[in-house]
Amino acid sequence: MMNYLYVFLAGVVIGIANIIPGVSGGTMAVVMNIFDRLIEAISNIRKEFKKNILFLVMIGLGAGAGILLFANISSYCRDHFPVATNFFFVGLIVGSIPMVYKRATVDSFKVSHLIPFAAALGIMIFTIVFVPDSNAASVMTELNAMNFVLLFSASTLAAACMIIPGISGSFVMLLLGAYTTVINAINDFNFFILIPIVLGCAVGILGGAKVIKFLLQRYPQATYFSILGLVIGSIPVLLKNVFWIKGVFTFSFNLEFVVAILTLIIGVLLAYFLGSRIKEQEDSEEEAC
Image (cartoon, rainbow, N blue to C red; front, side, top):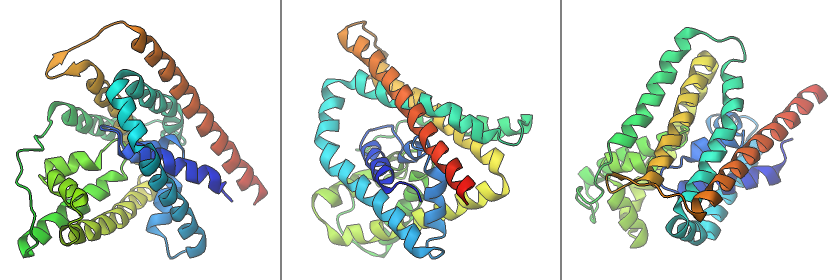
Protein backbone atom coordinates (compact mmCIF):
# COMPACT_ATOMS: atom_id res chain seq x y z
CA MET A 1 0.00 0.00 0.00
CA MET A 2 1.30 3.43 -0.93
CA ASN A 3 2.51 5.47 1.99
CA TYR A 4 -0.42 7.80 2.70
CA LEU A 5 1.81 10.29 4.47
CA TYR A 6 3.64 10.70 1.18
CA VAL A 7 0.29 11.03 -0.60
CA PHE A 8 -0.73 13.77 1.84
CA LEU A 9 2.58 15.60 1.27
CA ALA A 10 2.09 15.24 -2.50
CA GLY A 11 -1.32 16.85 -2.04
CA VAL A 12 0.32 19.72 -0.16
CA VAL A 13 2.68 20.29 -3.10
CA ILE A 14 -0.24 20.17 -5.56
CA GLY A 15 -2.19 22.64 -3.43
CA ILE A 16 0.73 25.05 -3.29
CA ALA A 17 1.19 24.71 -7.07
CA ASN A 18 -2.42 25.72 -7.69
CA ILE A 19 -1.84 29.09 -6.03
CA ILE A 20 1.39 29.80 -7.94
CA PRO A 21 0.73 31.53 -11.29
CA GLY A 22 1.99 29.41 -14.18
CA VAL A 23 2.42 26.23 -12.13
CA SER A 24 0.14 23.30 -12.89
CA GLY A 25 -1.14 20.96 -10.19
CA GLY A 26 -1.04 18.19 -12.80
CA THR A 27 2.64 18.86 -13.37
CA MET A 28 3.32 18.51 -9.65
CA ALA A 29 1.39 15.22 -9.65
CA VAL A 30 3.83 14.02 -12.33
CA VAL A 31 6.78 15.38 -10.36
CA MET A 32 5.61 13.52 -7.23
CA ASN A 33 5.05 10.40 -9.38
CA ILE A 34 1.40 9.94 -8.40
CA PHE A 35 -0.19 11.07 -11.67
CA ASP A 36 -1.18 7.60 -12.90
CA ARG A 37 -2.52 6.65 -9.47
CA LEU A 38 -4.50 9.88 -9.25
CA ILE A 39 -6.11 9.35 -12.65
CA GLU A 40 -6.91 5.73 -11.77
CA ALA A 41 -8.49 6.68 -8.44
CA ILE A 42 -10.68 9.40 -9.97
CA SER A 43 -11.82 7.50 -13.05
CA ASN A 44 -12.45 4.20 -11.21
CA ILE A 45 -13.57 5.48 -7.84
CA ARG A 46 -16.23 2.77 -7.49
CA LYS A 47 -13.69 0.03 -8.13
CA GLU A 48 -11.82 -0.61 -4.87
CA PHE A 49 -13.89 2.24 -3.45
CA LYS A 50 -12.37 2.29 0.03
CA LYS A 51 -8.79 2.36 -1.27
CA ASN A 52 -9.50 4.98 -3.93
CA ILE A 53 -11.55 7.25 -1.71
CA LEU A 54 -8.88 7.15 1.00
CA PHE A 55 -6.24 8.08 -1.57
CA LEU A 56 -8.35 10.97 -2.90
CA VAL A 57 -9.22 12.17 0.61
CA MET A 58 -5.53 12.28 1.53
CA ILE A 59 -4.75 14.19 -1.67
CA GLY A 60 -7.64 16.57 -0.99
CA LEU A 61 -6.63 17.14 2.63
CA GLY A 62 -3.05 17.76 1.57
CA ALA A 63 -4.09 20.18 -1.18
CA GLY A 64 -6.38 22.01 1.22
CA ALA A 65 -3.62 22.23 3.81
CA GLY A 66 -1.18 23.47 1.18
CA ILE A 67 -3.55 26.21 0.07
CA LEU A 68 -4.56 27.30 3.58
CA LEU A 69 -1.17 27.05 5.28
CA PHE A 70 1.08 28.23 2.48
CA ALA A 71 -1.09 30.78 0.65
CA ASN A 72 0.37 33.69 2.62
CA ILE A 73 3.89 32.25 2.58
CA SER A 74 3.65 31.58 -1.14
CA SER A 75 2.34 35.09 -1.78
CA TYR A 76 5.16 36.57 0.34
CA CYS A 77 7.85 34.55 -1.45
CA ARG A 78 6.36 35.37 -4.85
CA ASP A 79 6.22 39.08 -4.05
CA HIS A 80 9.63 39.40 -2.33
CA PHE A 81 11.65 36.55 -3.90
CA PRO A 82 10.02 35.90 -7.30
CA VAL A 83 13.20 34.65 -8.98
CA ALA A 84 14.09 32.12 -6.27
CA THR A 85 10.48 30.94 -5.95
CA ASN A 86 10.00 30.35 -9.68
CA PHE A 87 13.43 28.76 -10.02
CA PHE A 88 12.55 26.26 -7.30
CA PHE A 89 9.52 25.10 -9.28
CA VAL A 90 11.61 25.03 -12.47
CA GLY A 91 14.00 22.75 -10.59
CA LEU A 92 11.16 20.43 -9.59
CA ILE A 93 10.07 20.21 -13.21
CA VAL A 94 13.60 19.65 -14.55
CA GLY A 95 14.21 16.94 -11.96
CA SER A 96 11.08 15.08 -13.08
CA ILE A 97 11.91 15.10 -16.81
CA PRO A 98 14.12 11.95 -16.74
CA MET A 99 11.32 10.04 -14.98
CA VAL A 100 8.69 11.19 -17.49
CA TYR A 101 11.00 10.42 -20.44
CA LYS A 102 11.66 6.95 -19.05
CA ARG A 103 7.91 6.33 -18.83
CA ALA A 104 7.45 7.68 -22.37
CA THR A 105 10.09 5.30 -23.79
CA VAL A 106 9.34 2.24 -21.66
CA ASP A 107 8.60 0.18 -24.80
CA SER A 108 10.59 1.93 -27.49
CA PHE A 109 11.12 5.34 -29.01
CA LYS A 110 9.12 6.10 -32.14
CA VAL A 111 9.63 9.17 -34.30
CA SER A 112 5.84 9.49 -34.65
CA HIS A 113 5.62 10.21 -30.92
CA LEU A 114 7.40 13.51 -31.51
CA ILE A 115 4.18 14.78 -33.11
CA PRO A 116 2.11 14.81 -29.86
CA PHE A 117 5.22 16.07 -28.05
CA ALA A 118 5.54 19.02 -30.45
CA ALA A 119 1.79 19.71 -30.32
CA ALA A 120 1.79 19.78 -26.51
CA LEU A 121 4.89 21.99 -26.45
CA GLY A 122 3.17 24.29 -28.94
CA ILE A 123 0.18 24.64 -26.61
CA MET A 124 2.48 25.78 -23.81
CA ILE A 125 4.22 28.27 -26.11
CA PHE A 126 0.78 29.62 -26.98
CA THR A 127 0.07 30.24 -23.29
CA ILE A 128 3.30 32.26 -23.12
CA VAL A 129 2.53 34.42 -26.14
CA PHE A 130 -1.17 34.90 -25.49
CA VAL A 131 -2.00 36.35 -22.09
CA PRO A 132 -5.69 37.27 -21.79
CA ASP A 133 -6.76 40.35 -19.89
CA SER A 134 -8.66 39.29 -16.80
CA ASN A 135 -10.28 42.74 -16.60
CA ALA A 136 -11.67 42.59 -20.14
CA ALA A 137 -14.43 40.07 -19.42
CA SER A 138 -17.69 41.07 -17.79
CA VAL A 139 -18.28 39.88 -14.23
CA MET A 140 -21.38 37.79 -13.53
CA THR A 141 -23.01 38.54 -10.20
CA GLU A 142 -26.49 37.10 -10.77
CA LEU A 143 -27.41 33.56 -11.72
CA ASN A 144 -29.74 32.95 -14.65
CA ALA A 145 -30.04 30.12 -17.17
CA MET A 146 -27.47 31.61 -19.57
CA ASN A 147 -24.93 32.36 -16.84
CA PHE A 148 -25.43 28.89 -15.36
CA VAL A 149 -24.60 27.25 -18.69
CA LEU A 150 -21.60 29.53 -19.30
CA LEU A 151 -20.10 29.05 -15.83
CA PHE A 152 -20.78 25.31 -15.79
CA SER A 153 -19.15 24.87 -19.20
CA ALA A 154 -16.14 27.03 -18.34
CA SER A 155 -15.62 25.26 -15.00
CA THR A 156 -15.95 21.83 -16.60
CA LEU A 157 -13.29 22.57 -19.21
CA ALA A 158 -10.99 24.33 -16.73
CA ALA A 159 -11.23 21.49 -14.19
CA ALA A 160 -10.56 18.89 -16.90
CA CYS A 161 -7.47 20.86 -17.95
CA MET A 162 -6.41 21.35 -14.33
CA ILE A 163 -5.40 17.69 -13.98
CA ILE A 164 -3.45 17.79 -17.24
CA PRO A 165 0.26 18.40 -16.55
CA GLY A 166 1.45 21.79 -17.68
CA ILE A 167 -1.92 23.45 -18.16
CA SER A 168 -3.19 25.84 -15.52
CA GLY A 169 -6.92 25.69 -14.83
CA SER A 170 -6.90 29.40 -13.93
CA PHE A 171 -5.39 30.20 -17.35
CA VAL A 172 -8.25 28.33 -19.05
CA MET A 173 -10.68 30.34 -16.94
CA LEU A 174 -8.96 33.50 -18.22
CA LEU A 175 -9.28 32.31 -21.82
CA LEU A 176 -12.99 31.66 -21.34
CA GLY A 177 -13.57 34.99 -19.59
CA ALA A 178 -14.76 33.44 -16.32
CA TYR A 179 -11.73 33.96 -14.09
CA THR A 180 -12.75 37.28 -12.53
CA THR A 181 -16.30 36.03 -11.95
CA VAL A 182 -15.00 32.94 -10.13
CA ILE A 183 -12.56 34.92 -7.96
CA ASN A 184 -15.21 37.49 -7.05
CA ALA A 185 -17.75 34.77 -6.24
CA ILE A 186 -15.25 33.12 -3.88
CA ASN A 187 -14.27 36.38 -2.21
CA ASP A 188 -17.90 37.54 -1.86
CA PHE A 189 -19.23 34.08 -0.85
CA ASN A 190 -21.74 34.28 -3.69
CA PHE A 191 -23.08 30.75 -3.30
CA PHE A 192 -25.53 30.99 -6.20
CA ILE A 193 -22.72 31.79 -8.64
CA LEU A 194 -20.55 29.08 -7.06
CA ILE A 195 -23.16 26.33 -7.64
CA PRO A 196 -22.51 25.88 -11.40
CA ILE A 197 -18.77 26.34 -10.79
CA VAL A 198 -18.59 23.55 -8.23
CA LEU A 199 -20.77 21.24 -10.34
CA GLY A 200 -18.66 21.97 -13.42
CA CYS A 201 -15.43 21.26 -11.54
CA ALA A 202 -16.76 17.90 -10.35
CA VAL A 203 -17.84 16.88 -13.86
CA GLY A 204 -14.63 18.19 -15.41
CA ILE A 205 -12.28 16.37 -13.05
CA LEU A 206 -14.18 13.07 -13.40
CA GLY A 207 -14.57 13.35 -17.17
CA GLY A 208 -11.00 14.57 -17.69
CA ALA A 209 -9.60 11.69 -15.66
CA LYS A 210 -11.58 9.17 -17.71
CA VAL A 211 -10.31 10.67 -20.98
CA ILE A 212 -6.70 10.65 -19.75
CA LYS A 213 -7.05 7.06 -18.52
CA PHE A 214 -8.43 6.02 -21.92
CA LEU A 215 -5.48 7.67 -23.66
CA LEU A 216 -2.98 6.08 -21.27
CA GLN A 217 -4.50 2.65 -21.90
CA ARG A 218 -4.83 2.94 -25.69
CA TYR A 219 -1.91 5.20 -26.54
CA PRO A 220 0.42 5.14 -23.51
CA GLN A 221 3.62 6.20 -25.25
CA ALA A 222 2.05 8.99 -27.30
CA THR A 223 0.20 10.24 -24.22
CA TYR A 224 3.36 10.35 -22.14
CA PHE A 225 5.21 12.15 -24.91
CA SER A 226 2.38 14.70 -24.83
CA ILE A 227 2.81 14.98 -21.07
CA LEU A 228 6.55 15.39 -21.59
CA GLY A 229 5.88 18.28 -23.98
CA LEU A 230 3.53 19.93 -21.50
CA VAL A 231 5.97 19.48 -18.62
CA ILE A 232 8.95 20.86 -20.57
CA GLY A 233 6.74 23.68 -21.85
CA SER A 234 6.02 24.69 -18.26
CA ILE A 235 9.64 25.81 -17.84
CA PRO A 236 9.54 28.85 -20.18
CA VAL A 237 6.13 29.76 -18.70
CA LEU A 238 7.74 30.06 -15.26
CA LEU A 239 10.85 31.77 -16.59
CA LYS A 240 8.68 34.37 -18.31
CA ASN A 241 7.36 35.37 -14.88
CA VAL A 242 10.97 36.06 -13.88
CA PHE A 243 12.61 37.66 -16.90
CA TRP A 244 9.75 39.18 -18.91
CA ILE A 245 8.34 42.11 -16.94
CA LYS A 246 5.73 44.35 -18.60
CA GLY A 247 6.85 43.34 -22.08
CA VAL A 248 10.55 43.96 -21.42
CA PHE A 249 13.30 41.39 -20.89
CA THR A 250 14.85 42.06 -17.47
CA PHE A 251 17.89 40.41 -15.93
CA SER A 252 20.15 41.38 -13.07
CA PHE A 253 22.88 39.28 -11.48
CA ASN A 254 22.41 39.82 -7.77
CA LEU A 255 22.20 37.90 -4.50
CA GLU A 256 18.65 36.67 -5.18
CA PHE A 257 19.77 35.23 -8.52
CA VAL A 258 22.55 33.31 -6.74
CA VAL A 259 20.00 32.04 -4.20
CA ALA A 260 17.69 31.16 -7.11
CA ILE A 261 20.37 28.93 -8.63
CA LEU A 262 20.59 27.13 -5.27
CA THR A 263 16.80 26.71 -5.07
CA LEU A 264 16.89 25.42 -8.65
CA ILE A 265 19.43 22.75 -7.69
CA ILE A 266 17.44 21.87 -4.55
CA GLY A 267 14.29 21.50 -6.67
CA VAL A 268 16.04 19.23 -9.19
CA LEU A 269 17.50 16.99 -6.47
CA LEU A 270 14.22 16.88 -4.53
CA ALA A 271 12.14 15.89 -7.56
CA TYR A 272 14.65 13.25 -8.65
CA PHE A 273 14.95 11.84 -5.12
CA LEU A 274 11.19 11.69 -4.54
CA GLY A 275 10.55 10.16 -7.95
CA SER A 276 13.21 7.51 -7.40
CA ARG A 277 12.00 6.62 -3.90
CA ILE A 278 8.35 6.20 -4.85
CA LYS A 279 9.37 4.16 -7.94
CA GLU A 280 11.45 1.84 -5.74
CA GLN A 281 8.46 1.44 -3.41
CA GLU A 282 6.15 0.57 -6.31
CA ASP A 283 8.66 -1.99 -7.65
CA SER A 284 8.97 -3.64 -4.21
CA GLU A 285 5.17 -3.81 -3.95
CA GLU A 286 4.93 -5.50 -7.35
CA GLU A 287 7.59 -8.06 -6.35
CA ALA A 288 5.71 -8.73 -3.09
CA CYS A 289 2.55 -9.45 -5.06
